Image (cartoon, rainbow, N blue to C red; front, top):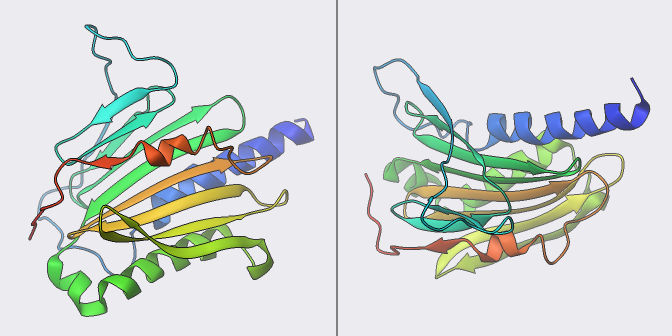
Length: 204
């Protein structure tokens, strides 16, 4: 297998499999259902009355809307109450939106700030970013809700821009990874397209 193809496959595997593993699947697990875990995988069907442009494939749920550059794959775990949307563009860039609902007591026990920092630490640890590969690590907000922005990467690893937001007791994680460089400003419009539809959410 050519070396370039091997490196690309390694990066894709690193981004998608690890994100699916560590995105909130830690010691702050929500209460498990007695039912068997079920995962629903589907392609989101476009609205045939108004076809989206390739750069703006809109995903809309009850509480948010976001634009992907192409139709994403949707994976839902009904027991863990998490949902992941992901899409790969070309041979080097990947987009991801992941969200999960937590029990309010789980977040209150740690506090919102520490809870977010713990999620970010998992991203850094699982992808193996040393301090010299972290270029941005700062607190941000989304419509008044707390969040963290992470920018890290190298040619030996992967280039990643990642944002985490806590909205009520729902944790959102958005990421763009690239095998060769940091995402461009145009690619980062993915983050800007993420909008909340209801900022007065209350979940138990």
